[in-house]
Image (cartoon, rainbow, N blue to C red; front, top):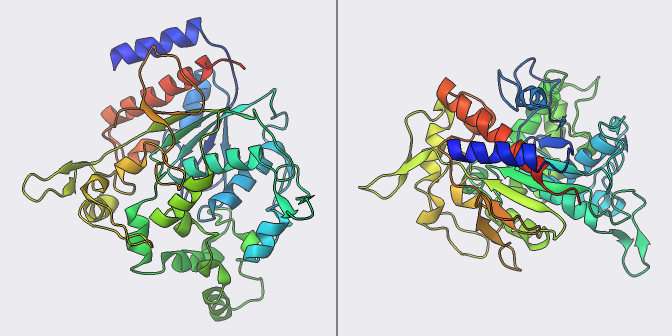
Length: 400
C-alpha cells in the first residue's frame, strides 16, 4: 500500500495533466448534501467531498432519484450539471407513462461549462456506477421519437451526440452484472412498493424520494388511505423503468447489452468483499466487523443460487459479497448479449488505454464501509487513502 501511495503521489505531481471536476453519484436509496442533516452519503460523519476538496480537487455531488431507473437518474445528473429543465425524453415518457418535464425539476447547473472542452470524471457508488455508464450512453448517442421519419428527440442531451464530455468512469461496489440480493428480495416481497408508499410521508427536505416524473407524491388534500390505494395500483411497479429491474441479474444483463465501454473513456472498478468461505459448507459467511443490519444479507447472498428468466443459474463464484452486491459483479460488465467488456487487472506504471476496465484488487470493506459508514478508525484511514490516491490517478490522465 505504501509503494502504491508513493506511485500515485509521484504521478500526480510530475505528470498531472488535467484538473477536471470529479462528480460523485450516489447509489440505490442514497441522498444528497441537503438531506439527512450533517450525515453524508459520501463519508458519513466525515465528508469525502470536503476531504478531496481539501487536497485541491474540484468535487461535485449530485442528488438523483434513490429508487429511480438508471435512465431517469442519468437524465437528472445531466441537468443538475448542465442546468435547465429535466427532460426524460418523449419516447421514454410515453412508453412508461412519465411526466416528461416535471415542473419541479429545473436546475441552475452545478457545472454549466461542461462539454468536450471541459469534461468530468464520474465516480459512482453501487447503482451510481450503472448510472454513470447510462449517462455516457445517453451522451454519445442520438435518440429518435420516430426512427422511420428520422425525427429526433427535442432535447440537448437525447437529440444530439456529445462525445468527449466524460474523461473517466469509476465504479465503487457497483453491481454491473446485477446483485442476487435484488432477485432474492423482489421475489420475496414487493419492497419497491413499500418504499414508495413511504415516499408520500417522508419525502420532505429531510429525505426526498424524487419521483415526481412518476407523479408519486401525496397531494395536499389527499387522505392517507386514498394515497396508498392510488400508489398500489401505480403502473411503475410493472415496468422495467425502476431500480429493482436494473439491479436484478436480468435487468443488468439487458443494460450490459447496450451500455458497452466507450473507446473515448477511461474505466476503473473497485471491488469489495466482507465475507469469507466456510471450509465446511463452502458458503460465504460475513466477516466479524460487517455492519449488523447487512450481516443477514451477506449470509443470504453467500449461500443462495438464483435463476434468471432464461433458466440459467448462478454458481458458487457469486457467493463472495460485501453484504449487498456480489463481489464478482463489481469488476465490470460481463453478461451482455455482445459479451463482456474488456476487463484487466490494474497494474501501476503500465500505460492506461481508453475503452477497457481497470479492476483494482478486492478490498476488505462492506458495502456501507466503502463510502464511510459504520467504519473503524483504522479502516477509515484506508478508505481515505483510496479516495485521495484515486483522485490523483484521475488527474494524471492525459488532457485529450
